[in-house]
Image (cartoon, rainbow, N blue to C red; front, side, top):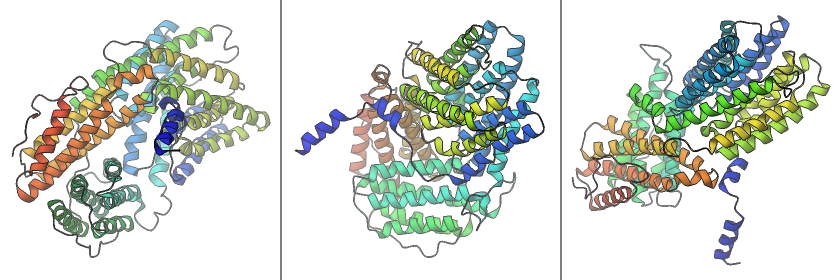
Length: 626
């Protein structure tokens, strides 16, 4: 078979994007520390509640610990305070509102209140990952508060919810990560993240002049994003930081000019010697071991980017020894920027779909609750709570979410039915909750697996709380929620479809423009340049993620974002070229002919895509001259 025929066969047999995404799972090492925390969270809390005869409060605390466990991702302790704490606070507020609304409002008024919460949470979710987690917990807790029959008042329920999430946060802050006991384990996540940046720089230098350079540059961006998040949490002391903390900030800041020089070398496309990557690798080892760098091999200084790399290595060695560095890790977002994301076209589209799905599912669930559908079961809140996870576009394409949720629920319900038939009560069910809590950090790699584990855990909690086995009704409610979300997901909405993707792409254009203008203006403020460069690459990565998710939708939805991937590719090339220009200007004081020609070509190509995203009016479109 000829190569052309082989390609044709592979193309013909390739799965459609929406199905391929549903079958794709994340890979990586098992997060054993998160597994331990999961085992020590929901299960022990529920056991304690059983022992003191406050089972209903234990169920709420276990639900909160479960939701916090879903957000317990790899990273630093300081970042976990916001990543776990903000959603927990939102969940407690939702539980409080849901409880009092459920106690004092009729079905119609309650559905309207929940719809309003859905609009609010949907708009919040467009801000970023932490806000999205907060929106999810707000709605899930509101549904639980409105529908779960518990004897406690709203504020007692909210305190129990905070206690459950707070317990997992305490475990996250107090327990050391395996392998980190030799040093100051308080900073093990930050240290690993910063070391990964230096290693990513070295890998990019190894790939200069090869086809892997683009992928390695993207991996460097991901490593810098992760390190930025790891260092962005609260300082351990308000007015003064420890020596180790200051050193980590300095090490991160020192990586930025190295990343800039490596990107410029990748743009030039001329292979460099293996000696060039030895220095960043030694810096990576020094960060991991919390040790001094020792002598660093100097690369050749035959080109502007190589001279920039050598200078960056010298600055890094000085920063490692003296521990001085600016606060270059914080994303400088104003309140206005956050509001624009929440109230912009992406936030409005997101909010309308979440609000409609949440409100409609709550209304349908209450109507069925008063019919013979539920029989002796009283958990009507399961339907809107399920719809919350299904309607969140940041969890994956719509059809992929629906398929995974349906398959995971059926599997989890069948597994639980088997366990419920043989396990003693309540001790066996408490042990099952502990096991599921330990499995959540691993199951988050695939939505169907996560759904199966969560289904088993929730059904166990329901039985411990005194309700009968509910596997069959759980399957029926999930399938009904899938149908509701599929219908709402394909309904026409006011405004243009694909608003979330276009909003992300517009943010990337704005950041790339700010970076380009700063470089071409010849500013001497390199710290500001590195900050702008980080924001440009970071917003591009966010746009890429949104575009890839939209492309994996069914064709009826995917067509609304066609062409956005091409714009993102052009923006990435523009930011890469701007980086090469910055390094060249530092060395020579003027742009080379190749840099000017490439900038002009890219700006003209971007100008041809005005129908997809509006370029800033002051963006230069003609020949670039400095």
